[in-house]
Image 1 (spheres, rainbow, N blue to C red):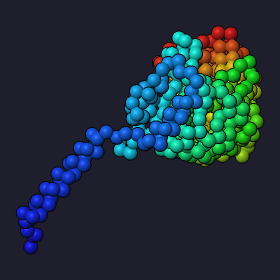
Image 2 (image 1 turned 180 degrees about the vertical axis):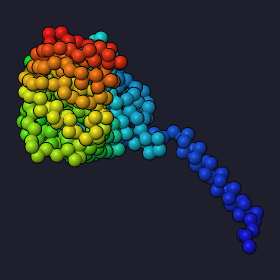
Image 3 (image 1 turned 120 degrees about the vertical axis):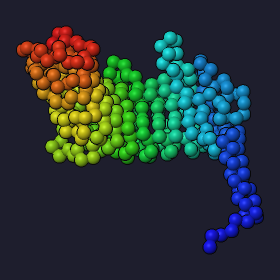
Image 4 (image 1 turned 30 degrees about the vertical axis):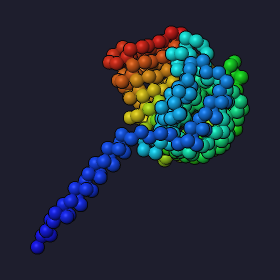
Length: 355
């Protein structure tokens, strides 16, 4: 016998339905203000900023609710700060040739225990990269590029095991590197990384193991080690089992590669034939050997300028049917240029000067 639906049970069901509607409505529309301790931490961070040329922090004194401050994002339900996004925008930087913020990165940021996104790029903080950054263990995106850091990259960065992207690219002047890495072992702990940029940092002490460590980042999509004083030593025991199957961008501009074993490494990466679309090996002036034996047909950008590559451009070039940009100027190529080059259907930019 089916249960009887009494007026009492109907009233109870209606009450519960109305309660759910109200909770949903107010949960979505109630004003969620930031957590007081986190607001105080942000104000403490502001006290460490000596110069604010762009007025990035002007709104921080208008309202006590830090969730409404410029560059701050809070969680919709808890009010916890989850993002601090205060870069000097490239448009401002290119016009004024100066940074927006100058000061120090204070330890008060540790109070932001739910922080997932931190971008302070193209400002100026100077000094060493603070070790306490490694305690912001919920970070998923960290961009501290071009902020004037010096010294050694601390191993504590390896504690940020949830990182998906990490950009520490720094400027260098006349090969006088301001930052260096003594060991990349900390990088092996960042197993979720998709994007990594250590450009301008001296990695010369990592020659023996940087390839092994990079090969064990299974989700890596973009690798940028430009101007890193980096050499290549290809171990015979190098494992490719855990290497990324999704890497699409590799930039290794202006390093110290002296033979074409870099191409052997590239050809062994898992899935590279179907994923890599951007390869820049330009200005490795000691990169010597024969190339254009590469079979990858998914590239749309290939830059090999400023090396010492020799040989001819053979019919294999016709396999690069997606290629849009090809730069090979400043090499030692000889022989004939295959007519297949002129038949590439998507080619938009080509430079063969001084080959």
